[in-house]
Image (cartoon, rainbow, N blue to C red; front, side, top):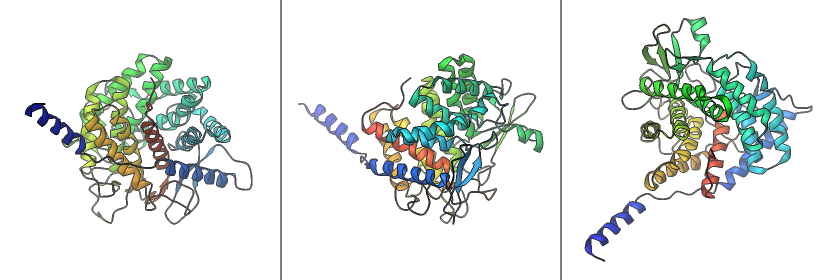
Length: 406
């Protein structure tokens, strides 16, 4: 072998060995999630039968029982508990868990024929019926998903190019037309429905929303604004603001998480490289500012840091997104993002973040809405959902399985 080939081989070896491969025994946290799911079911049963229209929402700091909410069009988190049950069924193959998942999911069927309250239909329906259809192929679920996507599409304004997030803010608080970064998660429902009989119109709406969000809702460093405001009549972008972050200039952790996840999904569904490139840029600004344990403070610019509350829910969302993103990249980039996801899951699976015996949720230390003073340093159901999702994705990757079958 000549000197050039030897040198080149050494460079390749160094490049491949430059990133330490992280490991996590995913079986243990998966067993833990299943056990905690059973604890929640026991709590929900109480001394009587389960009310399948009542969903776990949070366990506040200092409490050890779930605060539950009635499943309504206004309660945006209602789909996450059925989603947790579907993930538990996927993990355990327990037919009893499947029955619980079906019953809690069915209580949300009304959403498919209810006037759109806001953008949260994707959160509500795809977490529940979407996972249910993926695991069972139930044709009734398919119809509900497509009907819900059609309902969500009624909030699309072609002049603006996005889906209206909060109609109520326009009606009651005199806001302009608004689109929040959370809305990126709901595009998955539109993409899915388009592929399964809903038509290209739903695909086009999702792409338009993603493109306008990418253009208007990010600062030069690729941190996102929580809310983009548009002129209702002309569709012109007015400005970006926050609602749940510390300030208009700060980086709200969960908002950035929604963006990373949402644009990764956009690449999966469109194969347009601009979304994958953008998802990486949005992820990189998040990753470079993380604390040592890879779980963010609720806002990266919160003045109380290092004494500010963490947001485990953001870490769960990003871990799941990075595992998917890693499957679309060359080996070196893939390893970096996968390792970062593993570091997040390692921390989240430690006693510092797992609820353990203290309560039946999976995780502690999420922050819902700091400016509103709600769900601070709490256990929150969507953290549990994305934690379970990330663990199951990791298990599939470890087995060499595809995460998605189109």
